[in-house]
Amino acid sequence: MSVSTANQVVTEIDAYIRQGGGGYSAWYVGIASEPRQRLFDDHNVDKDRDAWIYRDCGSQVVARQVEVYFLQRGCQGGGGGGDSSTHYAYAYKMNAHTNP
Image 1: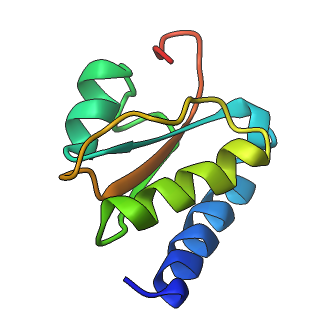
Image 2: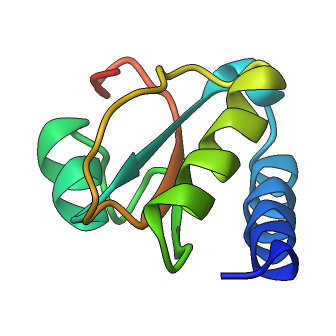
């Protein structure tokens, strides 16, 4: 994936976070190889009621770059997860029922 792809993913997720409101600290960001499973099963995000987004970054390198970008801006989460198959970045607005 090229830098323009990383920038495109950052731009799309950033626009969604701004639309969803609450500032970066109200959002959790992570990376996954199976983003729907991470969001809906592990984090307990309600797919019909909660604000969430994920994007295919094409590689683990780009996914990690996207994750670091948002962590540095104040999103909740932690780097270092995933493996070589991890190429999705995701974000969701945290609620009382979600699990970080």
